[in-house]
Image 1 (cartoon, rainbow, N blue to C red):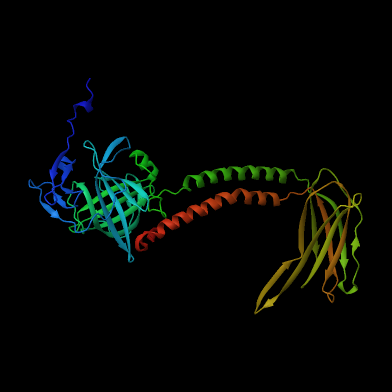
Image 2 (spheres, rainbow, N blue to C red):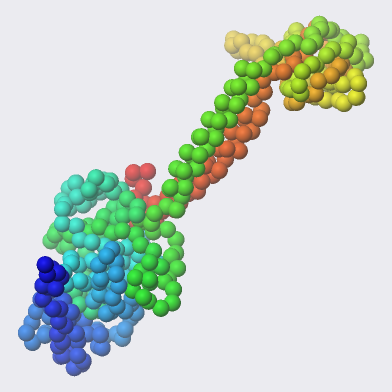
Length: 435
């Protein structure tokens, strides 16, 4: 069976002579060519006119040099294309001019494609023949839907053609203007070009790296370094953030299971309890409790304090001391409770009870040394101290959760910062209407 490709007619290139300078101009688009720009004198020619009429003359020399030379050939998405046209366009937003470059790609058996470049950011652009969902002529900041994808409005502006070179299958003039509305769903951009008579042409762009293009067209050197963040540039954090959150939630679930096992397995055994009193006016010396045993394995120990403070405070300096080794665990706690009525409203502040946990206390015989303090003129305070052995502790779980969640939170912040920088570039702030 013959190869269908072998049945295609041979592709020929014809040439014409520029009526302005006499240079030979190659025509690659055959019957598709509408305008041709002479590469010698940059005169704009009408390719449809048998006499090749002059449409526009350049008064200046070469103003812009294509980054990809005309005639370069490269393989993109499995199709070999040749660069046949080049133009530079400009929009003005908030008083600032922004220029980008467009390269017309030609393959005789495929639809026309385009390469656009702005500040080192590239897009491969394809014409769209099905109307995206929404009003026919774009206006406002309403999103558009195309092929099940929602594109957010980025900016609407007016583009002016500054420079053209090569061949084009449509009418092109230096100085012509057209409305442009861009909608983004990274790494894609949906664009509408609106003429003065409200004719709308849609196209779909997909973000490409300069390295990929340089390799595809076998270009020397390195592509221009991208500057800033482009409207449809894919976020480098999107997939990373999702993966990091999945891993963090899995680790957090494991830590939660270990913590719950510790809570359920804790004995909560009371090792010591004693009711005490303190008279601030007497200037009592520190007191020492009887000894008590902390048995079993090394585990957290909780010291509970309850008191009858009333509109006063009491500070307690606790020292848990091993009677055999002298190892000491010091901690200071305060209990305070105040209440009253202010402008007919009752209020309270503080708490008469307090708890503090000492982590991983080894077994042994211990006693407490207690140093109470309060207002020198305050009334006597009664309080009870209890020591609870092998209690559940939450500190390690809170610390583990913080360490587990910190990386995905930071990555999420970086991703959000990337998106803020992207939408900060939206023309006139219009792209922020959906924020």
